[in-house]
Structure formats: structure tokens, C-alpha cells
Length: 178
Image (cartoon, rainbow, N blue to C red; front, side, top):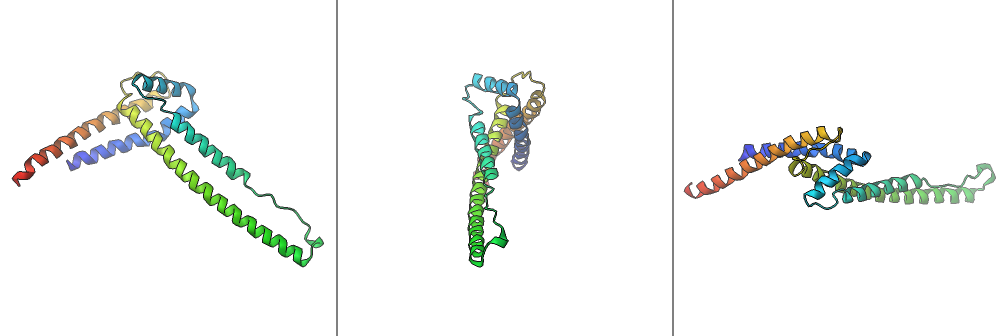
């Protein structure tokens, strides 16, 4: 049971390694996305890309907010300002720095949350491809190698899942005898 569990985890990790490649390819190539979408809908899955697309938009929105929060500061000639004006400018700069730091922290939090969700959704897509869509003959030349890798790992994953389940049942059956 232990060996089966290790093998199962290793095959799952193989599939999850393919997730970013599959998600990037689908995001870049409309034909890949269309082919995956049609195949999944034939198996009764709703729009498999809706969550990924929502998260992609959120991540790009965060990037836009980060680039636009550059903070515009007034340029003042230091030779034409008095002591109190310099103090005022220093205080304003400090306040702006604190505000920018708080905004950046908020953006980083939103970004890490969206990135985590995006990675989880892309792993679900890869698992769907490995388990349920592996029988489909995909035609896109860029998608075929990824589907073959996912299919091989998916078959192995199902085998080791069955082996693990069988071994655990057998252990339960003999547990009362010990």
C-alpha cells in the first residue's frame, strides 16, 4: 500500500507539472482552447476555461494597478523653498511612501491568492485531460505531445490508485486477525 501510494503521488505530480504548459498553450492558441473545450463539453463538463480566464483577467488587472501606482510627486526647486516648505514636502513624501507600501502589500496579497487559485485550476485542467480526455484524438500539433504525456501519467495514476485501494482493503480484511 505504501509503494502504491508513492507511485500514485509521483504520477499525480507528473500530471501537475504539465498543468502550466497546458494552461499557457490554451491561453496563447485559440485552436487548442477550442479543441479542449469541445472535448470536455462532449463529456459533460461545463466551460473548463471560465475560472482560468477570470483569474488571468484578475492577474492582469493587478499588474495594471501595480504599474499605474507609480505615484506622481511634485517637482519643486529646493532653492526656492524655505525650511517649512521642505519639512512639508518631506512629510508628504513619507505619507505617499507609506500609502504606496500599503497598496503594494495589498496587491501582493491579491496576486498570491489569484496565482494560487490559477495554479489549482490549471492542475484541475491537467487532471481532466489525463483522466477523462485521454481517449480523444487531438489534432493540434502543439497539444498532442502534452496529451500523450498526460495520458500516460493518467493511466499510471489510475492503476496505482486501484492498487492502493486494493492493498488497503486487504490490510483491513486481515487487521482483525492480528
